[in-house]
Image 1: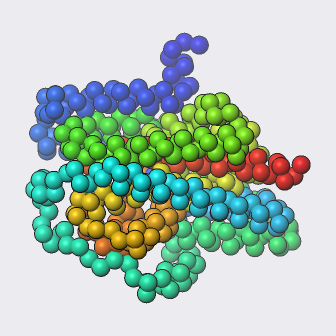
Image 2: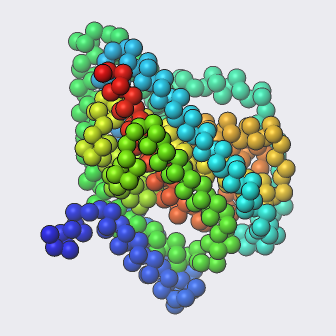
Image 3: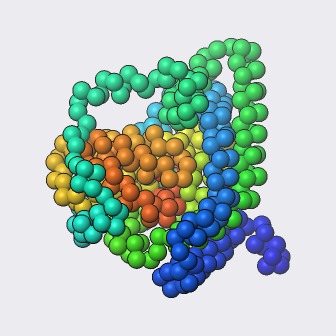
Length: 426
Ligand code: ASP
């Protein structure tokens, strides 16, 4: 195989090349070591360079709702026997909550020990980001009176509105209700819808696979803009915060290795080497959703996961299981609390644990969603949401790494439940 055809066949290699070239071009255009283009020129250049990334994002958003709805309904309906769904569904739910809680606890430990927010000077940041005192006002957090409302809104009253607004959590709840109802009805009444949904699933997955070709260009454009505009200095200022998040994500990869070895009983190195394709794609697209077709393919073809398990665990995990996002959100909350010198009481920490668990479930699996949903957690604990402005400049790179961890978590879960179902059936 020639080098050219090897590169042509391997998307991850194309992405790595784009990253390196993009980094070089970004440095040349920025003012750290390069020619230092002025801000207006950089802005207009990066808006052009962002076209492939925007197109790619639009494709994901265009198909995300039908894809997830169809995947989950089809998966549940195909699982068949009600008892099996109960055991598998319940088991997966508990497993996701446990791994996400581990991620949150890792985040709290690291953020408390390293205390990245205590190192930075708030007044300097306030000046560079032009923040007023009003912006930084600490507010009242979540109160227990808000719980009944939050619980009552879990079931979508108006599914069409949820569809149009892309509220993934409501769509998921509806898909679960529809899928479960289909398992108890006679086959002839559900088959037409099942056929239609299967067809929707195949078509949307195909669209995603085709649009993947644009990914190396998207990565190139984003990296050039980020390096040239944000500059090494800003990244350096937030370096300890970024380092804390990256260290926490590294710990999660270790946790997955242990789960693979001791629970799924698979070789760590052999399994991780099979994860490489979806991981690189997650890293480059910063979207678990965009990566989903490749995650599914890897689970079924390389990891030899039972189709019934992979078709249920991967779409569900992609939507609700985001350990990397939860870990990142908690470190970001602690970072901002330390920066704004807000003392976090035990109650606030408990509220952070619960809201970040729920927030990671509700975060859409698309680029940058984690930082947006973060504002909900900040408001809940009373930290000024404007703090997000400080984090957004370096968010893309953290998004790429946390998405890779999210996808690794889903693949690990599918290995675990593959083993469990095989054991139960044997
Ligand atoms: N981009 C992440 C994902 O798709 C979500 C996030 O922003 O944390 O998994």
